[in-house]
Length: 315
Image (cartoon, rainbow, N blue to C red; front, side):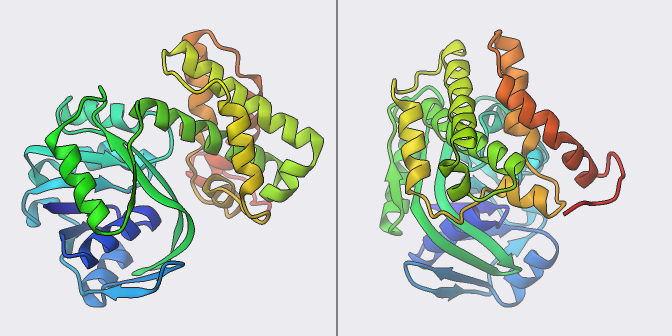
């Protein structure tokens, strides 16, 4: 199996490195300093499961230079999904699949809008990892698992081949009954926790221990549960208590990528987290007051980070 890692960040880079270390034929699409590091030195993985280094690696900023692959694992930022889809055509052989790892609930549909219904799968990555420097990924833990499948949940040879390759690489595989439900279940957790954490400017342990912010978090999760139901996406009856229990099990100093990006003045995924809840809620007739509050409160920081307005940065 030939695999392309498109966007070598914390998740895509880690899973790609594990595949390559196990002997899979992996090529890498990256830009700038990351591309330079991959081709000159390779990729250093600092992991709770053991450190290792690969490389130098076959990498390019131009997908057309790397030949066709069986699978594309897409690890770009959510706002880069459609751009990547338009560029990846030369990579895709006739039965190739694309596995999006983005948080949010719209990545597969964004891929379909460019590539058609054939290549895109649904995907969910559960991992705590980050790109700490060009060519250096730190894996801190979490389930370190992947879930993916055909969007209509049918069994397929390409899905089973990828599952086998990942298992051989020692990567945990989840096989959900419904991949869309799995995507929404993760979305309920990350979008709610990310929004509350960014508004409160506090780590996870503080948010969950103060009654007011805990109630805010629970209500944000409930809004997404109700939105999923309105859009015919089944979630477990106890999805909100389960998500809160997962919050309680995390390290107290934890924060989400949304919170870290906004605090540092970087562009974030706000539009695809609470912004998407507000937009989809409006489409579906589902009230989302907590997410609307979080979205509107954080929007000035997001607009500033993306260069659409200017004002002095307040840390």
